[in-house]
Length: 250
Image (cartoon, rainbow, N blue to C red; front, side, top):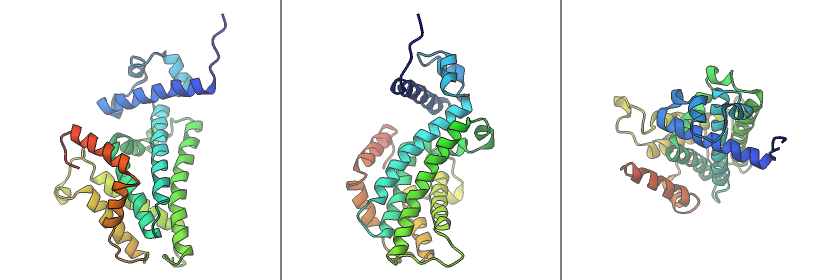
């Protein structure tokens, strides 16, 4: 009997089983605990079937990062569509990034892992291209809000600065603040009493002020409160459930 030919939907569903199981394994044992053999012990597929989908552990890790970037892209797009001024919209994107990291810290930190040479160099060309496309989509959301701000006069850039420079600075600022204040990262003395949300908002405001992004010194708190009770209400509830389960306050 000839082997069954799976359609694209069935192949995607099978791959999702592999990705979910791999993610759970990493959540339990860390990235170093992920092996193809351990994954095969958790799923109803053979090692050969896994290798039909992923070229190796590294390819699998990058696949997990692509999934995380897809989720983050949806959050960014919703934030960019917030019905406020350009400064409120860019702040909403930073808040969305923080929410993503708090709800799924494993996925957030995996993105760092995927870009290390030891992982990236062993990732398939197909997966590298898919990752880059997702990362470019995120950057485009930043760029669109920046271009909108320039078009309405909220932002004026000197000749030495491009829209991409601003986008990178904002992304690096948010990413660095969030990464350094992750809940499961041991904190040195200078970070012991710094909470993530006010830190992200404060640093974002400082950077926006340094660019002269109007309205200057705008208090982000009213916008954040609206995001929590409206646009990102479901994510806030999800975060509350996660922190309650861990016995931590929101």
